[in-house]
Image 1: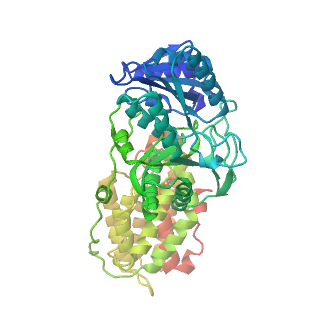
Image 2: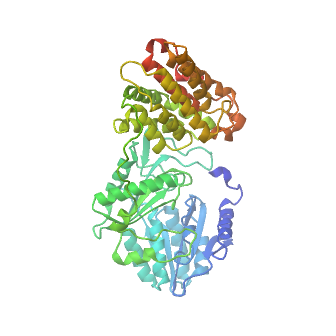
Image 3: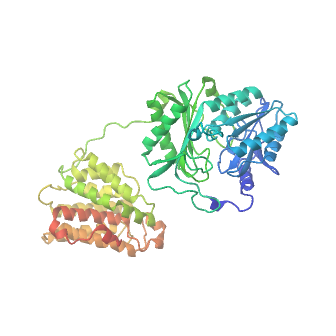
Length: 570
């Protein structure tokens, strides 16, 4: 993250960039540095001013504008702003009713905002302060500093901004702010530390399989290290801790799912769904579940949860319109709205076209082989693709194992799983192959008809070619499937005792040979010649299938066949 910050005046440069991105909304004052909203609601008489160290964006600058803050004072990365910045910002935006300072509970912030407040009072400007101290991790009786201020600041600034626009006075806003803070708690967890701007390395190290529980937004280590739980269990634990800490009162809670900088939207929305379930199961009524990055810790990989136990009159403050760079979702949840958010599928259709409900042994052996090979397939795919092939292949066979018996046997289950549930490029193409192979009887005792299997493999190859357009030499799964189908057919016509071993050997040679090719189709074609030397993962997956067929039905002949690692040259 810090690799792309300018070496000179990074915070001021970023402030100018924000103003350029929102023309007419924000202006930047450079000496001392602060940002101010260019417009305010006509009824507002009290200015709202906040700020803190940089690296937490979009806090606080994202809340700058009508319905939010009047001015923001950014400090250096993870450092409080100077009292001169705060004083100048307040002097520039103070309304007839004075200034309300919103301060996160960190020593530097408290001191510098406090000095600015004293200067303002000396000049006759009415001023009050709301101290944000929502961090449950630092809620200890042995600390004189008290709880840190974290992501509840976002909720506070939104609610106070709406009430200030309605003309509330300084004392009322200060009292409202104190009540919001008292009814808010947050807890954060991290899987990786932020990048240190000084060293370019993670600020602290984590042992494998652990998480830091209770981290701070300045990259502080957690108050404890915990086992890396499944995210469902982690969210439940965090929800339990927060609900136990909140004061009694209304059951409606506003839930903020906040990314700490490197956590993806996909992850945050998933956590939001899990949090909704956890809160509902515990008798809390989520007024809204709001996922996003609101209070970052540079590029820390982690998230925080904030719960605010809402008073009834605060709901319309949350939904009030605003014009700020950060657009907070303002719609509220009802039980009916939540139930209607997801359309549940009807019953799955019955399987069609399965000749024989057989092949469970093939399916289970294939699943074992894929599980053993997943890490190798993933590592290879990371070199030439996006790294998901191993997980996709394993997920597909696991899904097929769950379906088997309701989908016409092992190959039928593989066909349904890969055609219906496995995404990406190669997953559905494998589904076309399994669909054709599903027309063959794969007995639990005895051997399948090699001619029928060869015809099915040829039909699968033709379907893959029609859809994907690949030919032999393009460095795709076709480079393993085409020679396998041909060898199987030739061996069947010649009356060979080991046709599947011949097909497996041909598939392995074809897969290994893709390492010498420049990809012309598929995801690997995007990296071109940089993929030379890496065998195609899809081709290896095909080779793995035929190796399994040979070992199930021709164990003696297959004894000399290579393993996947040998085929891949690993």
